[in-house]
Amino acid sequence: MTLALSPTAQHDASVTLAVSRLAEEFDGWAEPQEVVSVVQTARRELSGAPVGALPELVERLARYRLHVSIG
Image (tube, rainbow, N blue to C red):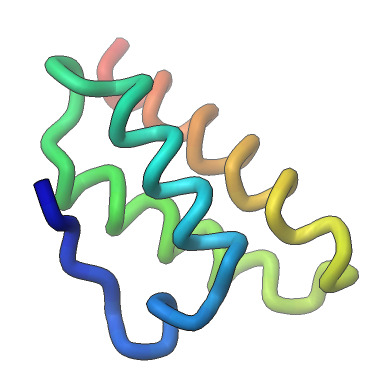
C-alpha cells in the first residue's frame, strides 16, 4: 500500500519513518490517510524542535494522538 504524503513531507525522514511504523502499528484501527494526516500535523507543530529530536518527537506525538482518537 502506498500512502500519499505532501510534497514537503516526502523529503522529511521524520515524517516518512513515523508514517511507515504507525501505519503498520495502527493497521485495522486507523485509516492510512488518518495516520498520514496526524503525523504531518505533529511535524508541523514541532517545527521549532531540534532537528535531531524530530523523528522521535513526531512519532511519539502522533502515536499519542492516534491512541486518543481510537479510544
